[in-house]
Image (cartoon, rainbow, N blue to C red):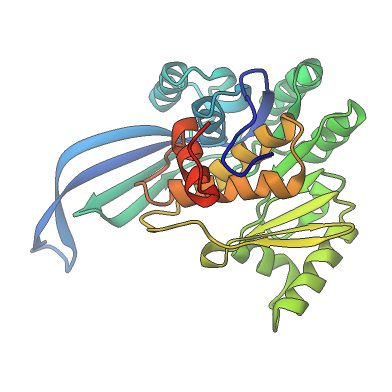
Length: 321
């Protein structure tokens, strides 16, 4: 694949499963300190809502021109209604199971003068009955897709992740996992795992140099029977590990404004590249460009195809195609 080109994602179909949330933003101005406590007073001038978590993965896939189905669990509440509406507006097909005993996860961010002042989380884990229904839907639909993404935000929506990996592999589907927590044994057998640097350190321990980092990464890949491992390393770019190679891509970020949601963009791009038949090194290179674009945007954001082509062309010295 030429450095300045992209595969046609229009026929690529990705099944996305995981924890979804509603990201709410309160933007305003801070001009004084509260008389009640030593905290800034934010005068809210604008509010926004965006899909977050696995919903942001799905939104990125659609923005890049791919097809996807999102399976998740939400509450039977106002936040769930808003999330469904936003996904429909983004053209995301979604099978969202409602749980009356669950509050849809909401992350509320207060932002003053383009700086985050506070984040407030509202969340409650889903019930077993609703999770079982989601697993049934997954098993019924997995054959329709070219790749599977499991987006774990530790909110309880992927209680059956080991079963989903096993079903995906049995059906011959590459399964990409964005992990959470310190127990990675539940992700055993995945095609590709995409921890960030701090998540990898929590599982593999601290490394002394690049050789030690590579050794720990390959050991984790082997222990979990993974085909591939990609560690996103912030200003140090990304590193890919397979059975026969270790490859690193330097960062493409020109300006880092906000890293929230960058992992969603990375795994969305990787899933489309793999669904299109690209090799892992090419997939990581393109995902690295996508990450460099999205971190220059505020909040959970998406990268579209034209932005990605422009970034690739700048690296390749050609024109977007």
